[in-house]
Image 1: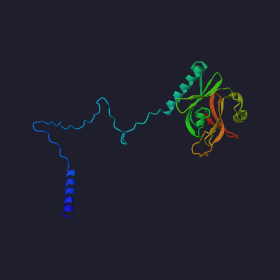
Image 2 (image 1 turned 90 degrees about the vertical axis):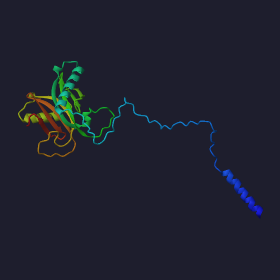
Image 3 (image 1 turned 180 degrees about the vertical axis):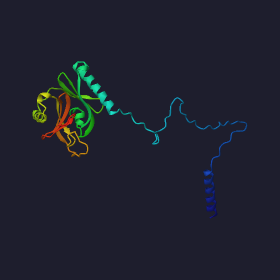
Image 4 (image 1 turned 90 degrees about the horizontal axis):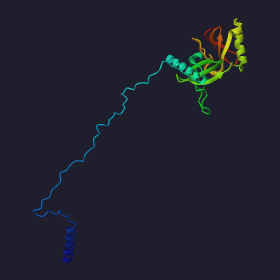
Length: 244
C-alpha cells in the first residue's frame, strides 16, 4: 500500500515538471541588448494636387438647363430649313418662300418623319415645329421637336390623289362667292387629329378626345394663306386666317 501511494506521488511530480512553463533565457552578463523603439504605421495622406470633391447632397442646388423660347426656336427652325433646302436644290435662299411655320400638336410619327423604318413607336401626340416651304413650284415640309428640323415631305407636286376632298373644299369656297381661279392649292396632307376639333379648337368649347383621321390643306385665297382641316366624313374647318 505504501509503495502504491509513493508511486502515485512520484508520477504526479513528474507530470508537473513537464507542464511547467519555459522561462525566457536571460542574456549573459556583460552583453547589452538593444530594443528598437515602437513606431505606429504611417497612414497615407491625399496628394495636394488631387482635388477631393464632396458628395452631392439633397441640399445642393441643381441648376436647370437653359431653355429657348418657342418664338426663338421657331425662328431658328425656319432659318435651318431654308438653308438646308437651298443646299439641296442648289438655289439661293431668296428663291425659297415660307408658306407656313408654327408649333402644333401632331402624332410623334409625323414629328419623326416616320423614320427610321422598322422602328416601333407607341401612339402619342407631342408638340412639334412644322415649317412648310415652297420652291420651284413644289412644297417641302420640315418637322422637329425644336429648332432641329428634318425634311419630311420632299418636293410634293400639286396634289391630285385627294380630288374628292379638294372638290368639297373648293365647293365650299364657291358657295361663299370665291371662284376657283382665285384659289391656289399649296399642299394637301393626310394627318390624324387628336380630337374632334380637327386641330382648330374654339375657346369655350369641349371636344371628344378621340383620334380623327383627315386632311390638312393649305391654300392661297386672294393672296392670303388659308389652312383648311377636314375629316374623312366631309367635315371642313377653315382655321386661318379667314373664317367662312
